[in-house]
Image 1: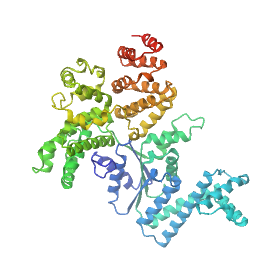
Image 2: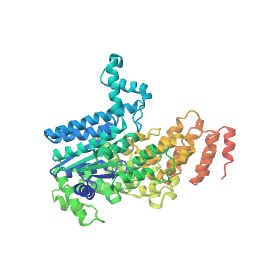
Image 3: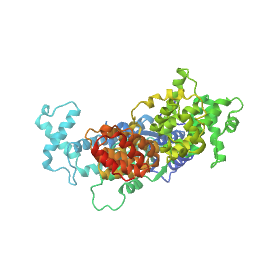
Image 4: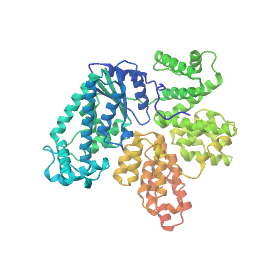
Length: 611
């Protein structure tokens, strides 16, 4: 199996992106600079950042610092957290002279003042242009009480004169004019610290920013803009730019008169050099999967040699490079194991097209699928079950992307009908099959069923159904915790139940992969089944989502036809009709409803549905 984390090994052909980033950082005419590494969730942003850091650390005089805003989110104010992290890293990397030590202490003192201001703001003190008004005495009591509590003291334990001095001191520190002066002082001292420590370049890598709440995102970016954007400093920020834009829009949503995209404008002003990670195409996905397989198959030295050879051969034939056995043999020599390598290449080719389309070329989701495949292979080994990886992979793709159809396959196999049905479909097409005809409009299924290996001639399929039997339990399992931020946002909009939010969710359908769209479908189906109120809101959201993509038609129909009679209300019947009309299956749904419904009023509504 493979660890679901960033890597310094370039499986994704990121060398040109790494070189672009390092070129900007090393250019004296461009600093200070901000570089945005943009990409979808799981696209490889953290890996690209890690590779860039490894490359930059080779240069003498360069200090690289990593800051993960998500890890610090619940510990401190985001501004002071990043400022403190940067200073701590400088001190760790450099022996400070007396002058540098003085700069350092001054900067840390400034951070303490900023923390004080943050504490004051959290308990309700407003910083106005002229400072804090005298009427804020009650709020100041709260500020002092909060600060003393952090020191383990109670406000009642402080004598009156001392308490008055503390209040005056805090009020003075919170004065807005002094705050501006402190910021300028911090900027100058920070630049002096870099000069005194002889840091040629300071590179701050900020990752996981899009996982933070909107306030943390903006506070981190504001700290960069106000305090640290001086001297030979570069910031490399890894994030999904849509999440940052959302944070900006959320903060300024109540400002009237804005007739432009404020999120986009803000980001363009802050990020000078945006670098977008492209989605993997089929050829790149095949190469990525092959490299993952080879990483487990080969010794470390051979694997490193293979990756280097692939990069070299890829540059020689950039647009048409295809990894095959002859190329692998040419790189590794004659001592390579022929059959295992051919098996890796064959399965990578088999998986690439389906995973590219179904997962939008997302490396993280691809790796998760391969980890599931690897676990099933281990189970087979421990159970002493003989299987073929390519057949297991094909079954698992169906289980992963079309779980309801997978259950139909298992039932047909149990009834000895599957092999005959597969033979007809593989030879003449889906529409010629009788039992699986409802998936005729599913392009994914058409590609999958025609891909190698052929299932109808694969022999005994019981081992594969045995290994995947956990997916055959009569329940709909949704992995909502594995969804990207975009998919989670869509799911939450659908769950709201309002027409406006459902429409907003439907507009975002093309932002996510077919796999995530299917996970949302299953989640909404579970939401409907668990809804004890019996209203139509969750059912409506489920139905409307089910027709947003052709890839969802067959799964939605199967889920609909598994609904217990007790859950079908009179108000649902028009929605059944609308769905049937959308996928040209109205008669089938009508006949099924009439078979299971006994309530006369509901039956009348079903019969009144137009053919």
